[in-house]
Length: 105
Length: 147
Image (cartoon, each protein chain N blue to C red):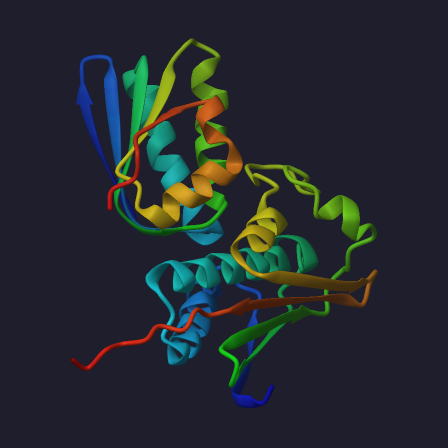
């Protein structure tokens, strides 16, 4: 598991790699929070293209980032989800707090 | 309905074992020739059940998680995940979406995912004795033509 960060002006993108579960979520959270604190983005893009599995720990991860970022008006966008990840996302009603692209086939 | 294969294993309630548990169950389920979606549903549900054991049942300790599975000649997989942890006082409340008894960043969706991704879920619990979750799913028959 790892997170690659790219910054383009006020947009910070976190490319998450590997599997997201309760075990891996803590280190992903730290990596994203450190980048968000440093760059103060107005938009945080979470890219799941290289995520091979996600359970509801991933929902907790998005909700937690939303709580931190929404305090200063920043938004979250989710992209690159597989059908499995998209299914978990849809179940949670995550589109109420973040925009999400259709899943890749 | 006849059981055609079964397995059982015991593991420590360490979070590093979450991936091991879902991969093992997925490998066992593969005998039924599931679709990718079906195998992902099973992996996700198992991951939630095992995480509940680690986060809730054994929140202050490392205990044992007992996982067993069986498949039948009717293409049904049944997975039992059992712990000897703190137990659930009110199962109905615990199964409500967004309910979580721990803080942090748990979404409270574990049981919701299990209910939606499997055909059935049965939960039995006794406070201070432990919890058993039984998940079942019928795998669709796929007929492959040999031309």
